Length: 298
Image 1: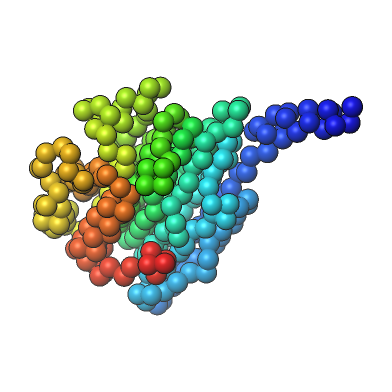
Image 2: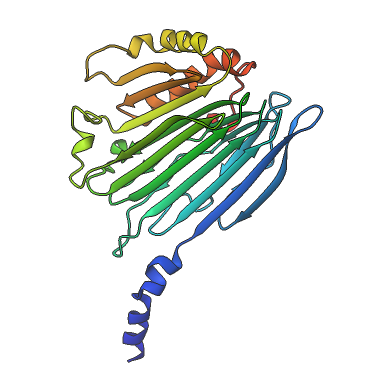
């Protein structure tokens, strides 16, 4: 009887369902000091941390956001809040790809929410590595960025459906992704992406056309027209070609915002393309040469 009772308890929702999920939350606040930006305030709960700030280029504060579990399972939630005060410059990245694993028998979704706020004359670079959706993942991802007038931004988002090189295919599951960007209280980009139950959007000619890696790159900075020309020169070998090549990239401009869209056969192609664009456009858009975070090289 005891054995049966123990098994019943272990299979109850209180153990395997919503009650056993990890809710990780972190708030980062950056402020400008005479010679550098400092991480003025940090609070966190659950398995989400940052390493100490790094200063490989002087004033800009490089921060590595760590999620020790290494991935999200059924019911997990990650909340990230970033605030850059006036005249501060923060670069936030991650040491590895985020992993969103398949849901359990209760099919409870995984949630990630990112909120970024930038005051006048501040700079935020939000450059996480890609999120990987594994089979049966049920991902709910939302990012909201609010920039005051005079603030600057470089941000990207990369997502992979499965990891085919390792034999991990995304055959069932779902994604709901929301992105919103406001500049001086004006909406610059309000975007939504959702998969359908049969995942036809991954194959459709009006969807991802069989590409399993997609990304968006956003820039609000100095002289957007010049930034667009720099980017179009960088992506020229991959633009305006036929569907079927390994990498498809296009760039456009709307007022102060420059956007790059990319589809790739593998995640490394996408990541390297975005890093190359970042290297070439950072001086024009943010006023400083690119200084690659060391964590990207490990």
